[in-house]
Image (cartoon, rainbow, N blue to C red; front, side, top):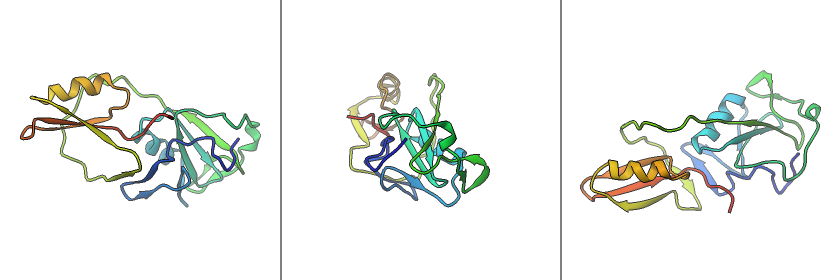
Length: 165
């Protein structure tokens, strides 16, 4: 179930990710699908995503604070794929996301993706090598990626989502 205080609030402090706007703790789209929502929430490492009323996508670290609903209450098809269910009126179709253990890192060019948030999205550490960045990132549940600056001898550990405070 859901109400105006929102059961799934993982995006509550995020304003946008790239070109995708976030408002009222959700991403809305006239072409919403389960694949889009799961992919979007996976960017932040969230364990759950929910779809509501055919076009709304929510990401969260938990759910169920408003109480359970009957599965039959989720009866509205997704705007972007009529063979999928995307919740109902004040009802979330909730799905779990799983992630493999990170056991290797890939070096890549800096992506052109801007994240707008009311919270900090990175923290810095002194480092001599890229390996000095990878070890603390691997040990942190919040770290999603690292940027190593050899010239500055600094690591920037990046996070894209926050557990509830």
